[in-house]
Image (tube, rainbow, N blue to C red; front, side, top):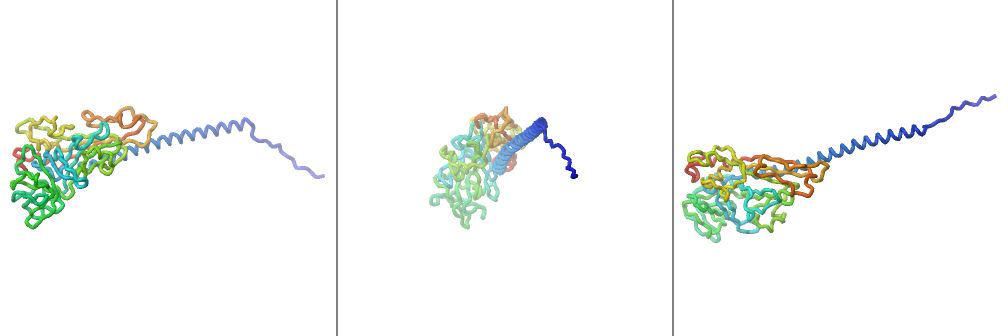
Amino acid sequence: MTQRPSTSPQRGFSLIEIMIGLVIGMLSILTVLQLYLKGDIQSRVTTHGNDAQVSATMATHELGRSIRQAGYGLNAFRLLGCSLTYTTLTDKASVTLTALAPITVNPASSMVPKGDANTDTLLVVSGNANVTSEGDPLTTTPTASGTGTAFTATTHGYFGAGDWVVPAPLTRGTSCALYMGTVTSVDDGVQLSTSANNATTSVGADAVLYNLGSAPSILAWAVRNGQLTVCDYLRYQCGLSSYTSNQTVWVPVVSRIVSLRAQYARDTSGISGSTSRMTGVADTYDQLTPGSSNDTSSIALACRWARVIGARFAVVGRSQHTDTSYTATNPTWSGSSGAAIDLSNSNTGWQRFRYRLLETTMPLRNIIWQGSQTTYQGGDSGC
């Protein structure tokens, strides 16, 4: 007789077991989603913060590089604070800078049109000549030379074709109005024919010719439409309001910049005394431009500018996208008491962005030694 194999009863999961499994699976999914969302938020926070950091860092670098060279070649007493007239290279416009100085904070809007609300503008000037900044004496009275002026200088090899030169009287005049032109030719007698028109020549044989080099830097800086922009004042009349929206003239350098604030670093020690001199240490930070209507100092204009021994500035970068975090207050910096940062007009819903503020102080290394001299470059008592 054949014996049939025994069979065991078959059984699967019960409904309760399946429901428990589903609950455990759903809880696991919810936990994973929570971790993912937290990670995504943290990633966006980090990314947005990095966006703002990169923008602020790039803007600080560009401004710092410009200011670091400010004043090079134009730190003589005969030049500091004088007005300067010249013709631009590209649009051939006649330009007159109110003051030939290393840096001007918030120059007149006719020179540098205002930028975004609650931001400052800057005008930064420097030369690039590889010669002494003390100038070269003339040996004869300048004469008309075609449409320009002929100068006979003392030092052979001191000038070259294409150099920008500024003649200045040996004795600084009260008005101190100077002009600048380019050297068109140089002969063996160190005679220079320049592009400066003879009608504006106001110096005699007893004068000094200053060489600012073949490519001096005259740069206007402003924050426009949330971008740090720069205008080359040697090429364009940057003061024209019609140029402010022209990105060929006002070139965007760094995007997502919502604030630029700046102050002079001034040495005011002994400024009201009769014998005390500057110490070379910045003890006042403000936006008081030497020679402006608010400047009540009685010392010589050149000394007022020589006492501007540095500049400090702050830039604020903004994230590209909004964030879940909330910025409750405006950022602050060392100069907030005199130049507060206000982002309320930078963007609708500005509190929903992330910001990074960077500030620094740049010494004007080419200026500080000049004002401390007791007798030099036309100064008879130092500053």
